[in-house]
Image (cartoon, rainbow, N blue to C red):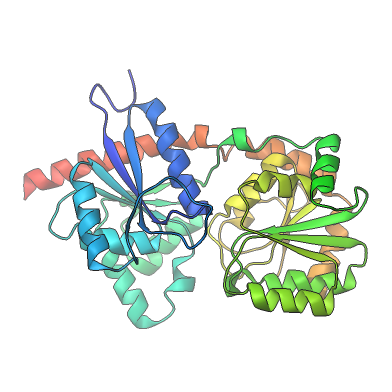
Length: 369
């Protein structure tokens, strides 16, 4: 017998766009994994991605706030037993699209809400939106605490389910695999290689990583991703570290970047539970990340990763030099530890239980109205 009983629940998973980014990829892989637990699911995107590397998920409109999109989302939800919103943009869309419906709604909180809802008006709006979901999923204990303390969400409506990836996509790197990955990327096989994978946006503070390269003469930096900060970062790299920083753009094969790297850099000012840290760790590449969001829960400093403080490029460069001395051993421990905590195979049954709970609680609430 499956966890959902003889009649499977149908869930609709809503993502912001069909781009191959962290939250979107998680939703697609979660739907695939939930099939093993008696659930049917489909993924829809609020809008189309601006790049050509996309998931095969239909988009509902031209923007995340268009009336056309909201009507299409309401129609798509009609055939679902439960709707799951992956992120704040999708929560807003789902709340408005389901305004006339009592359809069960699950909200997956993927980041630090306080960082994005900075003004009193934004916090008030978000507080109102957070009242609608039947269940909330926080990625770590601190995320749950923020929901209860700062946004008055009852703790008994929150489940803590960590971020995860499909382990099949990220095999442990061997020495020969690292050599081959560096050869394909045009890097010297014996050079020190650093990597950044993610959006090129202000909150990621990739400037610090690029600037640090100016004092790391024996290192190369690979940057995989795109975003509004890319022109500025390219100019900065040409000025402070000419020939040492390569911009790869959006890639369908992040595993190759992790495999080529000795160390993943994540100098962000805000994070939830970053999937890139999990992905790199599964490959055996440790992360050096700022202590934001769930990072302090994910990484044991010097054991399964490294934690730094956002004190600028000079401090980051110093930390990079120190971390490279022990990167290989730390990466091996990260690969073992992350396989025990952050794989889709482990979180899928927890998600199945949350979806079932949202459906059952919603039915009970509707009977009492």
